[in-house]
Image 1: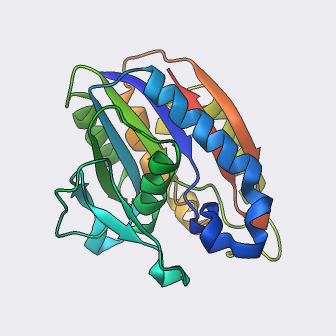
Image 2: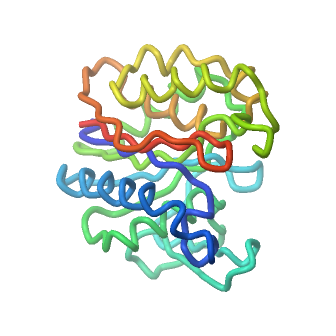
Length: 236
């Protein structure tokens, strides 16, 4: 059963070594993320599962001990999912590497940690089914859900300016901040993809995990630096 969830953005820039001279620009986002991870720890889960967008080669389960690297972003920094050093033959996708970095930064020492890479085009029903399956993995399950909103909020955004972006992001932030399961279920995959919102599928996995529940939610961060929607929220 799902007992807690934290929603965080997943840009590699969240890692100070990657952001370099611009690191201070995301200080408040980092602080909010660490507060959100603290909510997960307080829930004392039996299992923590990090969920994030992933390319075709990185989709599916990543066992505890799986490693990731930020070398593709010009930084010789490696991370490990959880505290096990058992290792894994699969490398973490960037989103789960950021999750692993957050957990390390928060000095996670609680439940075992696994990862799930989700295809950004995964149909909503499949996302919901995956979430229900995750919620049944243990008596007390917590999710660390990684994903960004639209990347089209400004002219300089990665996806350029799209007038639909602000409305999409406002609806997503409201749903995440109020733990509105129905609203997350209703997110349309097509416009989300067109707006380059990498969080849509992971958020709907969360909605599936919380299906039939009435969790409480809190929005800790909502901003669009670099023209990309970033949110931090907690569910419990």
